[in-house]
Image 1 (cartoon, one colour):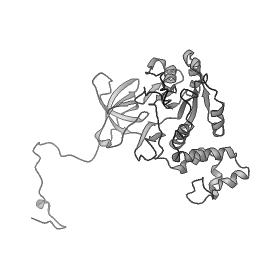
Image 2 (cartoon, one colour):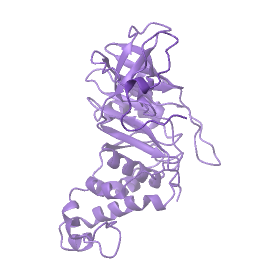
Image 3 (tube, rainbow, N blue to C red):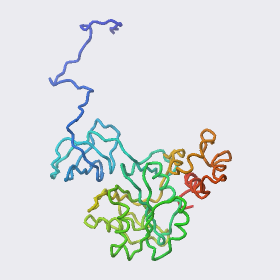
Image 4 (cartoon, helix red, strand yellow):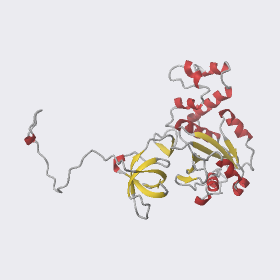
Length: 336
């Protein structure tokens, strides 16, 4: 076997002949500077429906993107057939930087995080006041994910004709979260949709909630021309509804603009991916009080400087309680 030294001559290098006669492969990828801009509307088994201009285009992810996946809400660059005609397929060659990301894991022990939606401005957390009963721990987890991902939360309470919203509003009052209370009658006549819409115009809003709370019913009222299948059935034993939305879908709001992203109903919202140190930034009135905290303070331990900060009257004690309740959600299950 011949061994080459440090100073080999080119004639000593053995090159394998190219039998096909074509050009050898290169690791230099094209920049695709002429690629068209688009937005991902939905993803289904490797095929992505994208909005390019005023038409929808079916696309697939280019091989050079590797494991990087595009999700609903992503701004992407596309090449290929952009006509949107039947049986045509474009390629997504670039995923632009995201302004926000809503993530979740299956549970707190699952290391695999799932990106639900990208580039959303706010997260509408839909919960029923009865049938099924509210699940505050699940709401807390959604709030933590929203704060961590850079989304503003919006609390939407449905079925107020079955139970009053006072107790739930008192629980989240210190967080200053905007909210809307709706009833089944208002959903039927369109009144609820108009009041919810006031918070949506000009924004990309992701809707999340567990099954049976009326999330998709509300989305249908907001975007009647793109109705999705709904359910009115809630299991009498478990108090849970059946999933009817199986994939996330972005739908355009008419008039002043904006987008509604309907996501599948969730029965758990894992936070294994969350860095607790980032949650404090959702409480700007408490941030100055952390300057005296020990290094790597969890803000829920005896030496935390926030206790003294609040006792001195710099912030509302209810705000500190809310922060610590959210920080503790990883130790508590949604049904607790």
